[in-house]
Length: 99
Image: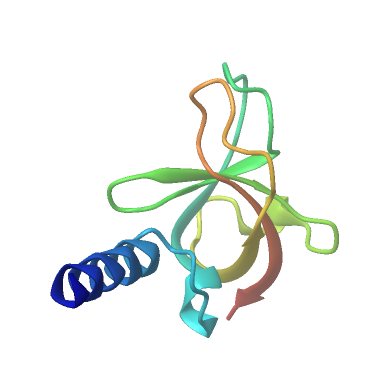
């Protein structure tokens, strides 16, 4: 019984780490090309960050994202709670663009 409990606990720890429930400084770094969002079905974000295999909806309270349109950037952002919705992408609030 102790052996099976240890396996279950190890499995749960592995899953929680893989699902992103633990945070590190690297969890809020993203890279890609900033583009205007345009008209979307999910209707949130002013811009998108197009990464290699995915994209993110972006907003920022203190950075003019339009100044970086068409540029490949590395940025720091916090995930906006309650998103994604309506099959849309992860919604990020950009806090810093690394230059």
